[in-house]
Image 1 (cartoon, rainbow, N blue to C red):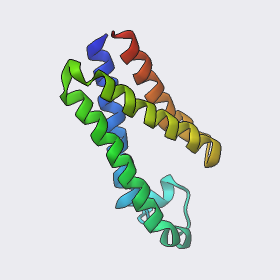
Image 2 (image 1 turned 180 degrees about the horizontal axis):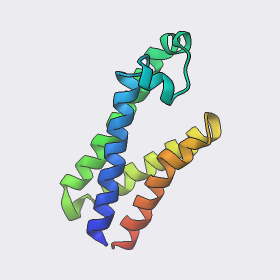
Image 3 (image 1 turned 180 degrees about the vertical axis):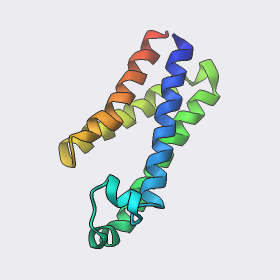
Image 4 (image 1 turned 90 degrees about the horizontal axis):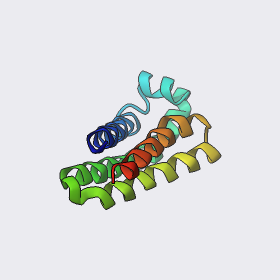
Length: 119
């Protein structure tokens, strides 16, 4: 179960690297605008805010990678960062769009459950 949990943690980390790329570099490009349902004007006006948000997603990915790199000693690090991802997913679902709960929150919850069951 530990390997399966680490695979899910790695997938959540990769997902957040993808979010970083979308928000920091592709926000005002066709893929970013389609993903976030933005008009060119809205993308232009919110580009700096999105880049900041992308940077935070990068920090989440880095924290999860750090936990994985620590091996068995990274349990608490993975637990903390998955909790952060879950909190961000719930908050995003409540304040922006329910889809965020499924795209961000559900993978984090699955990772948390698998991580806890692996102990």
